[in-house]
Length: 224
Ligand SMILES: Nc1nc2c(ncn2[C@@H]2O[C@H](COP(=O)(O)OP(=O)(O)O)[C@@H](O)[C@H]2O)c(=O)[nH]1
Ligand SMILES: [Mg+2]
Figure 1 (cartoon, protein in one colour):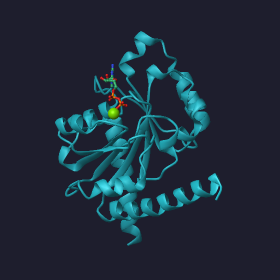
Figure 2 (spheres, protein in one colour):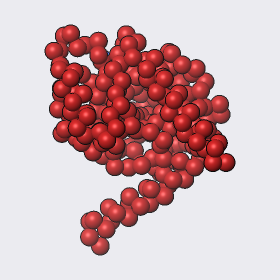
Figure 3 (cartoon, rainbow, N blue to C red):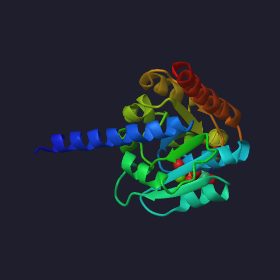
Figure 4 (spheres, protein in one colour):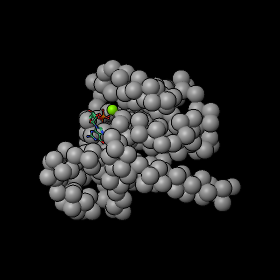
């Protein structure tokens, strides 16, 4: 069997498990977000800031990394029910890893599940986990051209959080150039400027979350 056939079969099996996860989330009224971005782009910090501003009982998280449970421990300290998924050598989470870990996570009363994916701008975009939305954290420290260099990741994003906005005055990063690059690769560009450290933009992020969850579940009610 050639390499392409094997890859196609792996993705097909992943899609089956992702559909199973998705049904599970939707039946329970859980809006699930696949949080992606480079290592150090501020993914965990955004979730910590979310916990400070939101009803923590309504939030749970899975945190993926090659090694360590550091992020899950940070999120637990922030008051979020969370579990680590360590992938060993894999550069992304997959639907089976998420499915397995769901059996160890108490989702009662949870409206939002955040899945922090392994940090990089390539593989996590390829594997469906059963999420309702893809969110990419892109830090101003990463320069202006990352959306053009990694278009697949940004093309699949429902929302991009431009993070660490408090550092802009020190870096001289061209914010317009970042937004322009995003507009070139995102079919429907939606962007929130955010500083997890200073709280800037957290209101807009929470408003996006609430609106997106309402859209999914009010549509489901109409269909029922
Ligand atoms: N100045 C500033 N630093 C931040 C902000 N968000 C995250 N950081 C720092 O960036 C580093 C990486 O953040 P982390 O949340 O671990 O990124 P992750 O690897 O994407 O989860 C840490 O040292 C954070 O303190 C922010 O809004 N402003
Ligand atoms: Mg992290």
